Image 1 (spheres, rainbow, N blue to C red):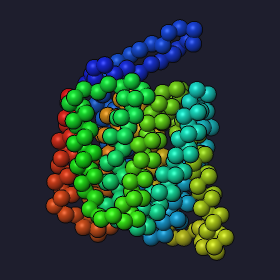
Image 2: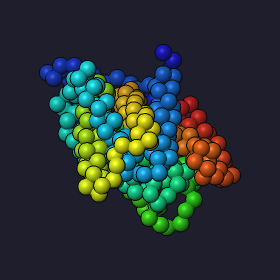
Image 3: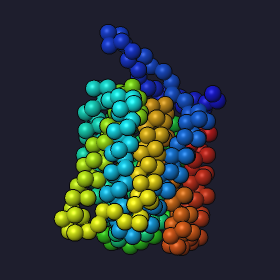
Length: 301
């Protein structure tokens, strides 16, 4: 498969624990690029559905219950991840809980086209720095420029003053950067990204889905409404989007995958503007073009 080689970036594979790790160069292939972009569309779509459902806690209850069921199915088929991946997975599980709480409340106070860009725009910078410090990934100057351009353009799409939505979006972005880095490291210790994603979402979805449902029942609020099918679709998209990203993180540098993944902000801006009627200003259109430039620099460097 056609690949663009990234110098000085390596993954380590240990086939036999008695031997030295095998170091192989990482390449960005057309296949990896396509999978990450499709995951970006799926991710923006489930966030748009979550925002479209006017009851935020109901949306997150069914999204998480759905991913928990999907997690059970994948674990049953591909098994549990390797034991070496479990410490990463458990830390990620805790961060994902915080991420869901921040994101749910962000959508209560802000629009999709405001919250999503700022939260996602922070992630590439944080993941790139973390991958440099903890995974030994040394990117070229051109790749770093591309990541900074993407992150800056994405963050510029959000237009709001200091508010609850602003601080919740920043907190969401920090959580995204943290779990993206940890999962990127953890999945490289797993025999399958679907095993890793399956157990992660079983824990996360089960905890949040059952927890939110229990609170709603205590408050005598329904957990089954006409919006139920949308919540299930959003949950399936959420699982598939993240499993695809984990697959890509086994095959490409974490900072590059994170930056490419954040092109989902373009899809979210369009969905917010045209489907949710949030408006699509000139700044958001310009930012979308700048993101495309950043992606081209990142992939072609």
